[in-house]
Amino acid sequence: MIFFKMIVMLIYFFKERYQNDHEFARWVRMIPALAFVRCDSVVAAFEDLSENEDFPTEALPVLNYFEDTYIGRRQRRGRQIPLFPIEVWNVHQRTIDGQHRTNNDVEGNCICILAI
Image 1 (spheres, rainbow, N blue to C red):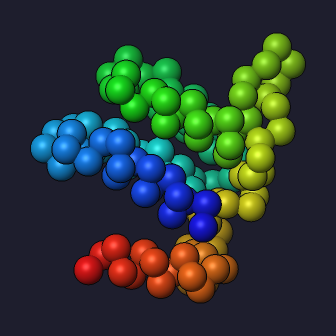
Image 2: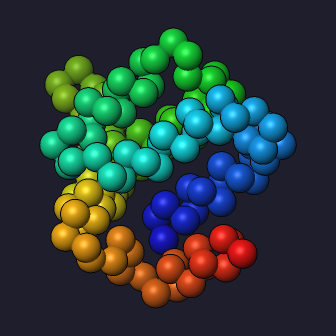
């Protein structure tokens, strides 16, 4: 359910731009794609994404939300503990093992409906 909410938020706020600007859409899709990066590389991948000068400024609020909720805000001595630790939402190993990428049947059904 975690990423479903984020995807709905992205579509709601950026629908027109997302549909018409393929470069913008590519950048925005990189945020939820972090779920497929190895757990020990997620923070570095997030930092690469967030520090890239080409990342669209209009999408920074979504990136900030993702950092606060799923990565943990950077502090002087490391990062805050996120609301949802990386190990909870990351699906890298589950994907490699051929397992379901969600443990929530409702989320799986909603995503199938959205795909129609």
